[in-house]
Length: 411
Image 1 (tube, rainbow, N blue to C red):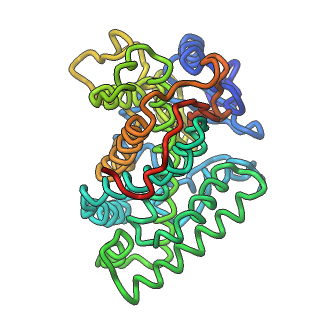
Image 2: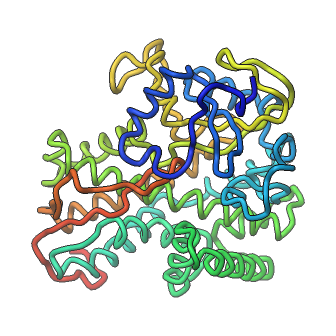
Image 3: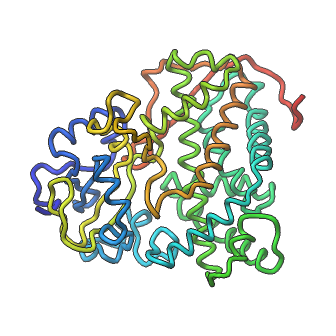
């Protein structure tokens, strides 16, 4: 059975998962099982995998479920203006679509470059930029902590780690958020980011420094400057938006769930607990595109044909009742969530650590600087962005007692 011919496929677009993703996943699992036929924008068929074991099988077998988008059996039906092309492209020179030994070499280059980031320096950057952002809002007593803080912090830290100057940071923040917004400014944002990355790589090729870009260029596997630019752009986008949503979703949980009330008065353990709960129950990266079957196969009782697209339902797998005994624990000794993926195409472990440091430091600075922070609107009125892929708050209005800015120094 192909996705298009399966009974009642789910239209996987727009606000499907905006309000009640847990309920939507339960209904899809009830009606279709662990592998769900879905229809993407433009009536394009695919499979969405919600089963924990099935997702483990897919991500652990890159030979059968390949990252090579050239295998897709729907390319002849895809128009040039298909809205998901930026996410599901073909012949893209980035690490996302590299397979086999070349992918392993490329992943090794990224891991080496990220592993060398000094953890004390990383936390220092995160704290400094977080303080600067709080300085801009603390005298007012009100703020949108998502759009005025969470959506601005990760990219500032990442640009500094990659080798950009502090002066270049704000324009790169604007460019990346314009790309994510996906509207009329998206192309201009992408152009600015690509141009800036190209200039940085050119400069570091001539004069290396102690940064991620220079370490990538020092790799001896023979990657071109264009490949390094593409990977830096992928790392920037993949590192910024999910980390921003991790901050926003964690603060939302802490401000709306009484279990975390104590953390608003200086607690630290609750910050880590809230961040971990978000990864299990409200993960920023809900679904990922994609893998493509390299031959006909069976998955979760479904017949998957060669070239079919398979979407990774990370949040669906995290909440799979077949491996969960309750809302938070897994049976069988398995305690690994899928929020960072799995297998050779997962988020590299050093990148996970960097994201966690940025998110946790940012949240701690918010709670230090705005200790009586509270929601400015009823919790029921808050909304999420209408995307089936990334889950984050559209806004998070808060109030707090106005305080003077630090002016760049903590005492």
